[in-house]
Image 1 (cartoon, rainbow, N blue to C red):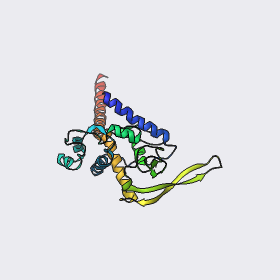
Image 2: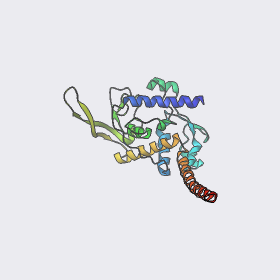
Image 3: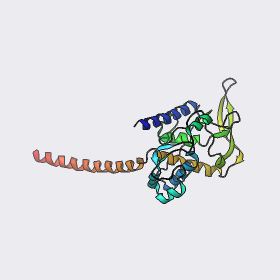
Image 4: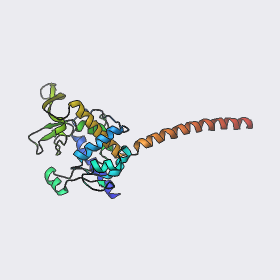
Length: 252
């Protein structure tokens, strides 16, 4: 229980820093396809290949990926990079001491990061993550060489830059001098990535879908069960009402 609380507080701390740094940047809507098995499988692959190098998911076991349609053999052959046992939890490959030296602190555990609370007028945790992973830009003033519009001055480098390429934001300035407002109008691609912009957005969507699913794997099952429970209660209410009416009719 103590480990769960520590992880949750770390995730919320990561989120709180992001909330403070958003600066009113609008968040894009995440796909939210947590029932799309193909999307979840691709998201799991991206997570293991790009995120698990630094971030752990200490409360998710590799064999739980069977719930999204992967076989145990597929998991062993394609996703076990940090352990040899499919029943182990998803621990990062990085040494905590090295992480502290490189980034100023240990990267947070991502098991429940998508469940972080939403910002008023912005969106959900998934919306933030979807926006965050698509708003990195090169910044030579930072130690990592990268900055982020959704989380300014972030210590994390752009792990997916080879897929997206390098691009910089284009702003439009509005307002009187001294009261200027910088509005994001688009992006200028400096160097191409291995994916087109559309393909990259889809890949990030898959990754966020997986992070949503990982944060609460039973969520979709619970929703489906809840629908059946409500239907049952509706039917039960109807029969109870008719039985009650019939009973009091005889009493009268």
